[in-house]
Length: 149
Image 1 (spheres, rainbow, N blue to C red):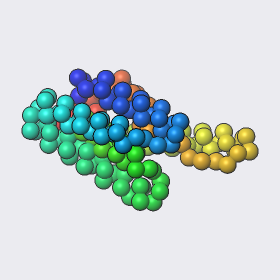
Image 2: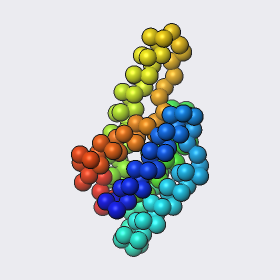
Image 3: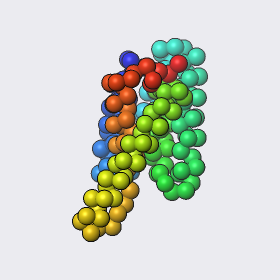
């Protein structure tokens, strides 16, 4: 995971900025992230690494499938989480998802309160910025939690 930290950080940073500005995450971005995550895992640990990456990606897809069907998150969020799973494996992905979801709740609360204070319609916050912030905090403070093993 340590060697891929800059790659995943860059992916999440670009996705977060794009999502914040447009409320969308480009398919090309998450596709490149998924491929890079799979290749990096395979390079680092061979077929076992590829297996961990594929399982992480599958868990990422599955974890947000129901929220996506309910319209709570977008398809780009689901695919971004799958790409994160390719880098982190399923265990690291679940830690990131829990932390990112908590931060997303706080960010959404802030955005809704700010909109109400300005007498504007309140909309939720995008998910990718919260996921990116959670990743950075975890990577700096608890990197072992993001292990792909």
